[in-house]
Image (cartoon, rainbow over all chains, first blue to last red; front, top):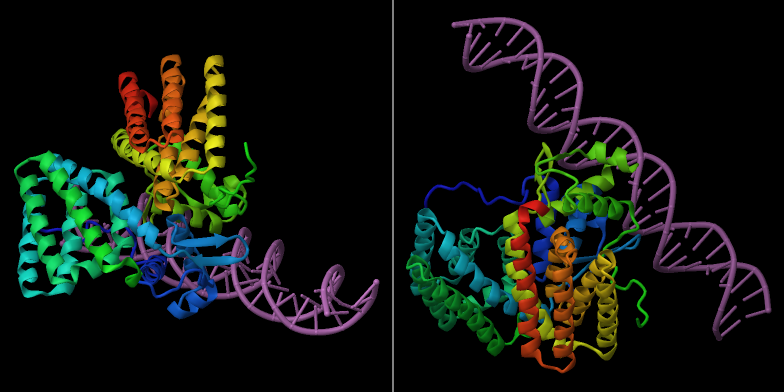
Length: 226
Length: 226
DNA sequence: TGTTGTATTATTGTATACAATCACAGTTCG
DNA sequence: CGAACTGTGATTGTATACAATAATACAACA
């Protein structure tokens, strides 16, 4: 992949606050906490070996995101992503990933296109191998590369968040041979549409791609994942 | 309007941090700061009569939102909403408000529908009066009522933020007789489609409504507003 | 028994103290 | 003259201290 050393670091992972934020966020999104779990500043601080200050800052950020609900003078409580949320997110993603692909067709650079193709080739390799863990990473990477290529700060922000929020769901869908093969094929089709500068086709294909993912989830049953 | 006492208070306006957050956010969105203005914790704290602690927490929230850019150990800098951002937001809003109207048609309650109609009637009254300041508030209220009615935490969150981000632009468009009359008419059409349970029509009309707003802006010229 | 008042304790909210880092000016040395 | 070095001041990052608030338990009382 052409050089790019962590340029995408929009979030600060090096400060204590950054690490605390990532840690709690990951714990919520991965389902380690239950809904309404009370997050006590002192306890979390002790667990992570920091004082309350960075913990508070992290909790306030998570509140803004909606992953945590803060009641003044009382405490912070976990707000899980619900099944309804996931369904809504997939409907929104369907539209927005379509728009993203359309814009990417317009704005993508030669380098970004090459990077995308490289990711795709690797995906195809690991699809054949059935290496789901790696495949999941590459799936994430493919989508994130598209988000960047669309050249829209606003759209990128939303889609990146959504992508995180349904991480568990995506992990589950990828981990089946049927869906993973289809998914990679769809990625290639999207890539080719973008490469051929066919924005309409790219948009339709990207929309379909997300729609089919949620369909494969609904067959499996969302409850089992969340 | 049927009783509802500030239930929508998802953000904490009463703590110092809440007030600091609102204050800085308003200053950024209203254009009181220039792009890249350095926001020094001590200075802001002094200005608002609080210590650095609540200021820091507010800045971290604004960072997550993308309204502020924090460089570790260096400082916080204002990230204005650019003209490109506004255009992107309107494209996204066009789609999302459409979806919102569709969902609202499905989920809206009798009370919410009555509230919406009341807002609409007031809007029509103040349109005739040419009372733009009040009209702007009612326009905001109408849209926010739709966001609630759609019954989607996720969609509500995004659209509410967008709504804030383009506040200045909306203020400018409302303040012309031509557009304000049209806009209120479009609101009524959307309302009637929802009332008649015609989701498709509601979606199309809501999409159009946003699209026409941005068109009227482009005639006027975005640069003059931002 | 049930309710109200109150002391106690735990937790959050804010201010402050101190450490770490950075920007910049002045200095030294090639 | 310019580049590397260094000390000083300013600013952020984190920890801690203290204040304010809320939850709890328990006693007093009707």
